[in-house]
Length: 627
Image (cartoon, helix red, strand yellow):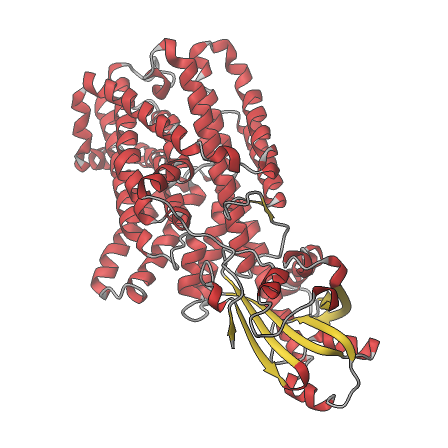
């Protein structure tokens, strides 16, 4: 039977479209919204001195059409239709295509790789954003340039240090602040465009194509810099579950996209009027000298908000990966009673901080960091385009020619950006690739090891119906014993160990399986399913979505008084197995992975803590398991 076990522990977006669009400005658009700080400047630097008014218009045309094709068309218009019950992001897309419709290892591998790549680039975004903002101080007083890196380190340390307390109280200001940011950069850009209206010629895509194919290797290198304008596009899809597609689209077309185009056009107009040698930073040179410091302050706040969005996204992706069985359990803290999305993952926070600070101190400028930026994101976008083709065919039921035409076009565009970014591989592009490769190795080791562990456990047990028959006449002790198990149709190993060593069976036995569904959240009416077995045995399954955090005692207590089995927590004991993994087989790649799995399994957060079971009600039974 199905039992109403309380409201879902997740949350969906609520509020008016306008309110949600304002909130999306502070969460979704921080990364892409601060890219004008360094994109044009980097493109000019990478042009190798081959600069002319025609080259400036060519760069602007490439930027404009990158924003149109990659962000406006691919993500906002097309990919955001491929939601998994309202949730977006490459892991949600992987779950929709690779698990929900039958387990497909190749699609799961692409999803894991895409998530690992986003983690790899996640450490670069705070570093390059904060550095680029504070570099505006050089225009105020060149002597301050020596303090840019120390100030960036201070800002980043402060940002990561406040994460354990949560940002719920100040996050409501993120949207309005980013609205001010986009308005300011749009107005500054518009003022320069009005003085040089001929930059509108860059709206012609042929201007960009002529520059790209007419400048040989230089044009190809500049394409890698141009991609920096779209590095935050993946966030539009990943954060869809928080705000919904309509508010994100409204914010993009209504404010973000026009402001970005005006800012890039204004910087280009300034460069045409003032050669690059005289314009140290085209973004800040748009601003009157008397307003430089306020603009630097606003830019710093905007980049902190952008960095906060990246950090929060890393937490959310970690929770998804754990629930989908791609990573071991880690401690996740809820930092807000109002917003389910406000969580804190200490391990991820401090690892990101360490890597971000190393990058900041090592590269020392946004120009140097730009070489490391974009490689991982461009690969993720390429993987998303491949998965999008499958969504076109299997979810939207598009015809084969139409799917090949649309997805093929995006794959060609993404492949060109991947190739252009890989030119920067030895200048720093290898960093996110190494980080992503390490994380991908950990995820595959965990998922393969966990599958091997489950197979070994099932090999050592037998059907629960046979167990009930065999011990039908055995004396019982009072109380309720809840055994956490991956399957309710076989005898849990912990139950066998309890019977073997303690020689007892409780009066009431509950086999409890916690299952993660391939949807973000589970409706309250199907949260808990209970089946009564003979001799006061019961099989229960508690289902959670991959965006939810389990709380077993709450679910069991909420069914009190509903005409079904009730629980007295003071008379209930939870039995869990604490296994020691023993890798077998000859030394080789699989043995290495099993040893890595052994390490992660030993250091993973215990099931009782992850499921929020009171420590005083838990009995752990140890054992060794060969895999």
